[in-house]
Image (cartoon, rainbow, N blue to C red; front, side):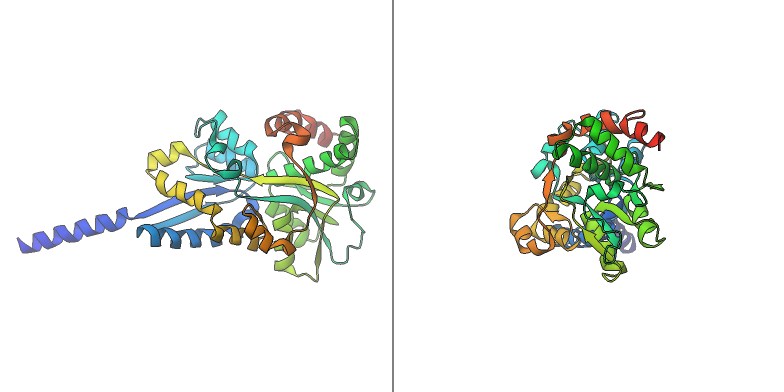
Length: 330
């Protein structure tokens, strides 16, 4: 009888231990690997200290739009951390995985950090690439990920288009300019990290268009003696939104910890980590502390130039839209 009682207690203890360990899947875009590696460790320690529970966070990375489609097709993400609202809207509109008003659940339209599109060039900038106009010169080779698959590529495309509009050009001028730019693009990689590999490790191209954080991470990893970061005169504000995936967290019973995971991104600890990985923090105090790392630049928003992500998607990136028209005549 005693042995049965002890065995029962041990079994109960094992079940309780197992119940106090939770897993989350964060489906994210291509160039957040290093940031979320650090953030996941920090959040796990925070959650353990607060609740006594162990949380293990798994990551999935790829082109932002490819990742959104994977979730739509059944990849069971508890949370998504994307680089554009358009890819999260997809989960609401086509899959009913999240509510239509998902962006109102966390501060700053659920975007805890931002970035922008910059240029990464070879050391000492041998081709003298200083602004968008230099990218359309004959003989310049530009590396950029595919705007149909990658939010990184989409921001680069829209930044080039907006550069023309903000300087007083019209839509025809912008289409011509972006067309000439993409005629200088020899290969379209599927995501931002793949494009970085093409430029940095394979040695292809004179300039890489990518997010600010990716440019500085590449420079840091492969050597400041090999690459320079160039800021154009005008660029685009990249707001990087996050969302719970309600259908999954309610099925898995992870809403409490998943909500805390995203909410903690706004904490001072997480904002410092964002700055460490060259994302622009939303916390003004943290941003001021790192002001030397983030050059002031004239930024425009998607809403300002394109009327929002839905309008930009329909006009530029849907099948048969402007990007297809531009690239098919390359």
